[in-house]
Length: 163
Image (spheres, rainbow, N blue to C red):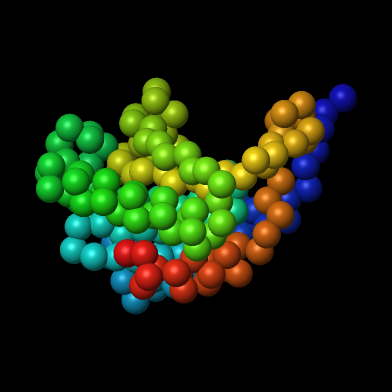
């Protein structure tokens, strides 16, 4: 028997035209559409964007403006800046979003598990005790229980305090 998960919110993704080229460079090049694209923060080196299809509510990414698929080619100054943003992001998620823990990670290259392999990015995933349940552990299904726009607005309201 085949399991089917009804997910009507993904219709926008499936039916959308798509973006030519790198999706992260598209975000960098379209500052005027920051809210539409889920941008939480941007500065001269990096931007922070909500993950459109998150692992848990509040999952966001820190992305350098510089297009590269090689961490080793990133300017060390930008890498240090990303790390500082990650520290602030963890503080934001724990204090402002009430996460009990945070997963931080980078998947480098398609073989390393990157969904968007052509442009490096760092994930910050808020976690709570018991946030995996029967559906996740046994059926391999994630349940996203919150409204994306509501969470985006809440986290964006916290940015001035933490970034």
